[in-house]
Length: 302
Image (cartoon, rainbow, N blue to C red; front, side):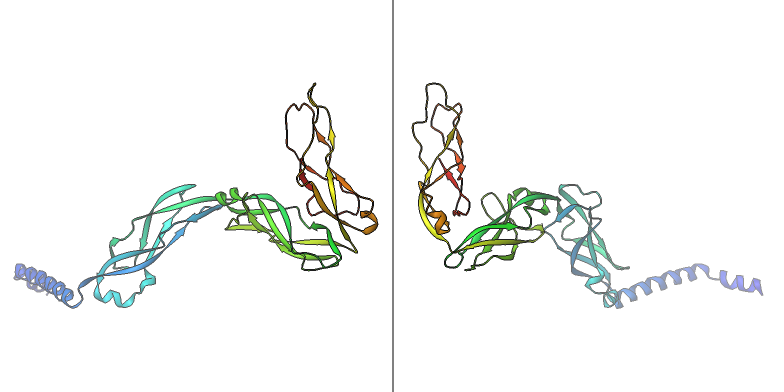
């Protein structure tokens, strides 16, 4: 019986082989006619993997067009979220990097075309630094009162951000509104990062984001206009002397209790050193204020 089966298999073997090949070709033709390969395009978001710590990652191309090919029936079982595009930042360094776009598609799909094969990625270090806090006053106290002074809970705070942005920050400014108060009060003040020109610097994290400021207010006060008297120390070069001084402003308004104001006709500056001078000079100097006296600005130019 075994021999009979062998003979049956060998009989007309070439014709049988040709028939098998023909059947395969016919099957492929039928399948191609019934389920042909077609092309389609998907818009795919681009994401990153293996981002190094301590860096801000920036790239402008966040979506790409992905053209794929597959049997028509394959498209019925997939949607756009099955197609992926990503950037591997394992070897990225600070500065500009050109990174190859990598794609992931479902089984049976072939990538024909990618709108962006590479994307420029900018890596910028994220740094921290401590900067001074400057509390500025807005508005006025109530009638018969004046601001004696303010105390902030911190003198400096930490900022964090991209290296380029952090480098621009000269300090942190907070604004305390007096809002007609006549008694001491405390308030939370938001800190704003600014550059040397007072312009706000964006994309900066501040810790703490706000500080507590206490304002001390003096009541029962009056005002008086007095002259400013410059004071000097040291000696100029031999053969020279201080011939005169111009103060800006020449006079200023002082605030205090009536019994204190009555005894004050002028306010002196801190001593200005003239050691070694032999020509005109300009100095910024603080005023020497008696106890209980308040001035809007205690620094003058001589």
